[in-house]
Image (tube, rainbow, N blue to C red; front, side, top):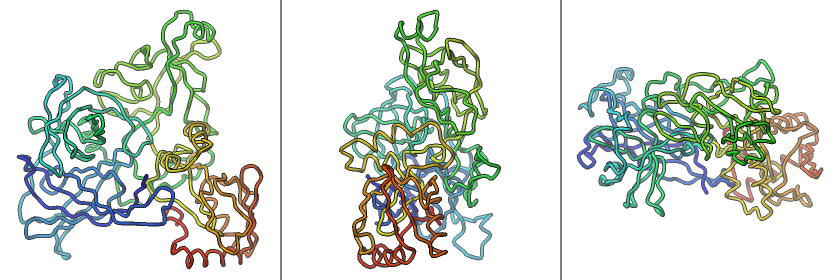
Length: 505
């Protein structure tokens, strides 16, 4: 499975897509890398439509990475485009056309012709007005296809670090892709985020969530970083992951409905409840919700027998998602009141609500930026769900680590570092800690790959030996000179010019 980073160029050509004149075709060229070999790169093209509004702006979907620069080919003119907003979880983006003249005022572009309407996007917000099996149109870089509305549901965000509400649909065409628009009577019902050709079903980001993204003012892609507060100290930890409107309760769990279990927990009435099995908290935080708590009720009501809450906008949704939604959008509140059963005592607590991010998970689903470090021929990677799936893990050890640390007791930016392989060079003969978890460097426990890199770099600067300690107390030791020689050999023998990813710069 591949992990995608940096986009290079976007080329657009204006064309009426099956009677939808406000859609333009967007072709994005990315550097693509494999999950376990992020130092390699190849060109890959993503084609997705853009829905034009306010003449100079278009809404589009960037599934496979980040987009910073763009160019639009409009008949005889070639216009640069800027990505003005990008959501790190939803991967929705707004691109702006600017004048091709380098001396022009880019804040006030002048186009040779108008593109689309001079107003807001036409969004279909009232999903209750759409009966099941209502014909919708899936419009993209292909002839418009008819699909059928199948109601609402939930799914992982495109980045994979949280849950989101969805519009569900069915269709029989194979060309439907993420980024296509779901349309009804000229209005946007949603942006397609996934389609399974084996079942002919798909899901889309609802129009209400798109509206929230468009109205948000927190997306400044010109900033170098976004500060996330680390509760362990006063200094914020910089993050290069774009912010998001997606909120997360940090909960995981399952329905508790067995009468004997509920009686044992102290519940008098035998009604379904939600058993918390996973929480995303930082080590220095007070645990508002703990593993083993039983959630009895939320602002949206009591959980059903399948662990869902009735949302007034989307219907039945998993409890962890339902409690972070309000009026069809993600709540802007920092906490939500819920009733829990703990130690056989019912109590009301305030559950923190956070912005979703890979920085809040020890094992995120995937990483926005590539992360790897090759030192002494050891290929060090940070564990992600994407990498777990790409491994030949016959023992299931890394699947267990993902399950154990996916959420829970953690600090912002903490990661599991492992040696995926050892590239044999003279300096690492006899040292083979393949598929071992790195626990410390020179006796210092490592928090993430950036932290490990900084320790190694400082030791090498001082000319000190570098001691890698792995789980099981296995070690690998290199002198500073040996690491320098090994790096040169890796570059020459394996054709890897860059021995660490940009996330370590």
